Length: 108
Image (cartoon, rainbow, N blue to C red):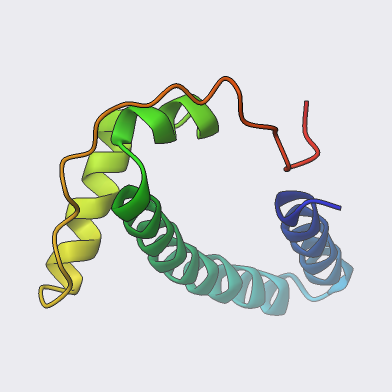
C-alpha cells in the first residue's frame, strides 16, 4: 500500500469516528478541531517535503514526477524557508530526464 493510500484510509477512519458522534454540537466541535489541527500539521509536512525534494531535484523535475505545479513548489519552499530561515537555500538545479526511472509508488 502506498503512503498516500494509507493516509487517505486513516483520514476516512477519522471521518467515520466523527460521523458516529450523535450529539451535533460535540460532532461539530470535534470535527472542527480535527480539521484545524490536521490542516496545520499537513501544511508543515507539505512545506518540509517540498523543501527536501527541492534540495535534490529541480522544480520542473518535481512537477513532472508529482504533477504539482512548479510555481506551487516554489511557493511551498519559500514558505518553509520563511519559517526556517537558518536552513540553506536550494541550489539552482537543472532539469534531468527522468523518463528512464522506474515508478516505485505503485500508482499508475
